[in-house]
Image (cartoon, rainbow, N blue to C red; front, side, top):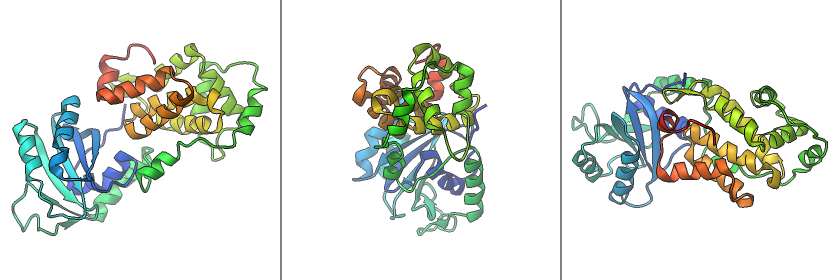
Length: 313
């Protein structure tokens, strides 16, 4: 079953944010959607103007992602920031707001707490013990953190030197079957895939039947929750290697499938970027188009797997 992240308090949640987002947020409003204290989804909004300007976008995001309760985390250097308008708007929409936290990722305070002994105006320090505990849990489950959104997206940029895979493509005379493909995508060796293996993967997933079978395996779920998210994370790292190092005219489907896989893990930012690379050379790339449509509609991966996906992309 999919590993669920349980929120034990604001300090643990703040420590988890970089892992849940994939990068350290700055000047952001992060909406954490919960069911029975477990994180179901995370939405992030750039705080590049006033909090009030973000309220319509936040309410729209919440309407597309039903949950039992939410915690809002405002990441900003000013822990005294006035967020009363945001709180009022959420209460008016009858959102079950568990907490509204202001933090610079080092210190935090709750805007809902008026007791200065409990929540001093300059905040409380994020406990290193809480931070270490949640970090260990998330690192063990395969989450990684980049220093910024820009750095996170830079890993998707195609490699300008695709000659090794281009030459290997000339030698491939058969496609991999599903088990062979899964074995390569599940490999986690330090050296990564060889040029020949990347060529085999790229050609094999261009076959619609093989790709559909692969998707059913990678995105298998129970009640919408992935049965093996760690396997999917490993496959994503190998798909990323294939996509970046294969000539784009052949590797477009690798980017498309990578986009859909990233979306299934909840990484909409990277998924949208990967889909863009696929559609740049292949405008009708089906997994890339599907991924962008799902992101634009605000469809939650768990809900989609539970109710929509009876067949592969």
